[in-house]
Length: 163
Image 1 (cartoon, rainbow, N blue to C red):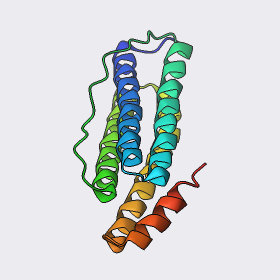
Image 2 (image 1 turned 45 degrees about the vertical axis):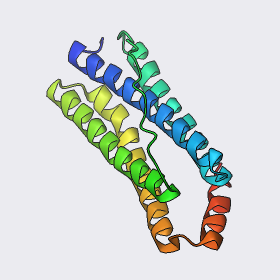
Image 3 (image 1 turned 90 degrees about the vertical axis):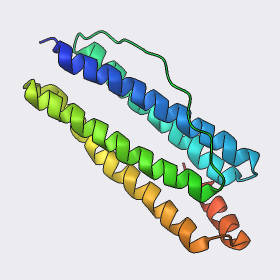
Image 4 (image 1 turned 135 degrees about the horizontal axis):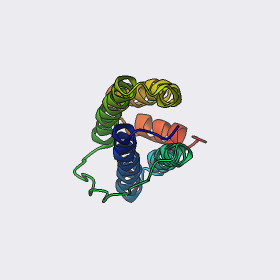
């Protein structure tokens, strides 16, 4: 059964949101690496790739269901951060927004009685729990560290180990 137009439109919107997330995290990587926070930058590069992979999951799913992928412009990201804490607070806020979008997509799938999309979205719902927790944990660590050069150095090193 082909995917319903309302669901396909919502998935196309989510593809754009995931690509924006990838773009945002890449901008954050550039900011952090320019400040010599190479570990933080590495974490953001990995996150950017992960968000691109999320977009491709939606992309492939839509094609599998007979839908049309419609790519739209990706807006420029904000670049007004001052510290790693500012960056990771923005990451956490962004992940909360993405969770809301995934929940809205689930609501549409349920309204349209699209159980296949509902099933597919379970992976994303679980993923968002992890995304929010990871971002919040880093925010909390940065709050504890404050301006400690040693603490920032150690956390930068830790985040640089992300696979």
